[in-house]
Structure formats: C-alpha cells, structure tokens
Length: 151
Length: 107
Image (cartoon, rainbow over all chains, first blue to last red; front, side, top):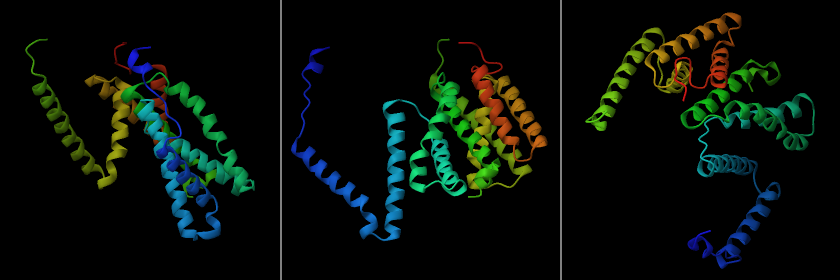
C-alpha cells in the first residue's frame, strides 16, 4: 500500500451524513405510507420515478463501475415484469407474492446469457447484449402465454 | 507504415463509409417506406452482418450479410413471426462458436 492511500481517512457520522440519513428516512417512510395520503396519479408517478432510478443505478453500476456497456438490460426487466403478470393473472398467485417471485426468472435467464457473453468485450459485448434483448423481445411476441406481446 | 496522416485516413474512411450509407439509403427507400425511427432496426442487422463475417473485413461483411439474410428468409418460410428471431439465433451461435467471425483472423 502506498503512502497516499494509507493517509486516506474514513469519516463517519459527519453533519452532512446525518442530514442525508434523516432526509432519506423521512422519504422512505413517506413513500411507504403513500396510499394513506397521496392520490392514485401521484403514486403512479412515484412508482415510475422509482423504476427509472433503479434502472439508472443498475446501468451506473454496470457501465460506470464495472465498465460493461450493456444495451440489453431491458430484457431482464421485461422478463421480470412478464413473470409477475403471468403468475398473478394466469396462475392466480397473490400479486405481492408474485412481485417477490419475479426476481427468479431473470436470475435463471442470466446464467445462459453469462455463458454466451462473458468472453466478449467492448463493441462485441454491447452488440451481443443488444441482440440477446432483441431475441427475447421477438420470443415474447411469439409466445401465446404473454398474449404474443399484445399486453 | 510510416508517413501516413491518421487524420486524413480517418477522414477518408469516414467519407467512404457515409458514402456507402447513401447507397443503402437509396436501396431501402426503393423497396419500402421510410420513417425517422427506422434506423435502429437497420443498424442491428448491419452490426450482426459485420460480426458474423468478421470485424474489419470487407468480404466478411458481405458474407455475413448473406448468412444473415438467408437465415432470416429460411426463418420466415418456417413461421412468418420467426424470421428475424432465426437471424438473431444464428448471430448468437456465431458469437458463441466463432467469435472472430467467418472470415475474421484469430487473435
């Protein structure tokens, strides 16, 4: 370890940290009890916002920290969303249980995708992920169980 | 090679590439209608053709385009909803079995 790294300090519980912690706690509580005080339209907007924040952070972790420029992550989002709807609507699973279960299929899908794409880098990786996503999209438009992509 | 001006080479290569794109645009407009959002649909086929044939090889891109087009045509004959999907599957198979492409050189 070099000297500049050993001089680095980690400071915890700074004033700005406390402000952020309190603000985040209030925000989480406010969002959790939204059905008690917010209109349906506002809840819908906040859910959409949370969706975009989650997707943006996912991409930030992948490309920003991991250096993996993927243009195919929407495939996993779509597979998760379809899993939830098929479980809840076609098989009558409790929607809240289905929301928890829908993380399983994207995780299973990630295994063959990994073996296909893990050797690729740069442009090959980006295009590979794009084609995987396109192939899954076309598969969805051909599957009767998801109403052939008609919603 | 020495004495080559990279600026000039890049500029010429870009000019030729965009010029070829003009041919593609003319042929596309001759066979179908055009819309501002058509690009991505054509771009993915172009990428696939180049990688099937081998990145950085002119004849590779030609062979790749043939392979992709014939696979799609066969797919469409099997099931009208499956043609493009068959093209993607062939591309992914090439990516898995021969990542450098059909005419590409081994690194």
